[in-house]
Image (tube, rainbow, N blue to C red):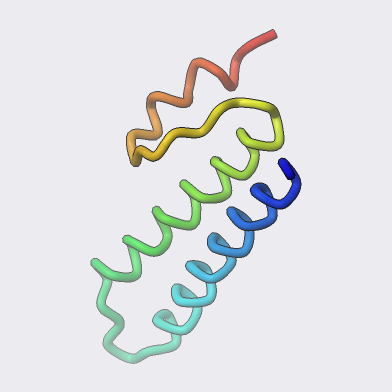
Length: 73
């Protein structure tokens, strides 16, 4: 079950990166949209890692809320 959730986060992040690569090939790429998808990919990869590590991921875009659990011992 946990592995399924992790895989779903990774697939979604990979799709954001595909969009970034596609836009980077454009002559006049929309930088705001490109940056958005970069941020989304990072967020989704982070959520995949946190889920794998056993941290409960909530529906938020506030990544600072996840900084504490990453430094647990």
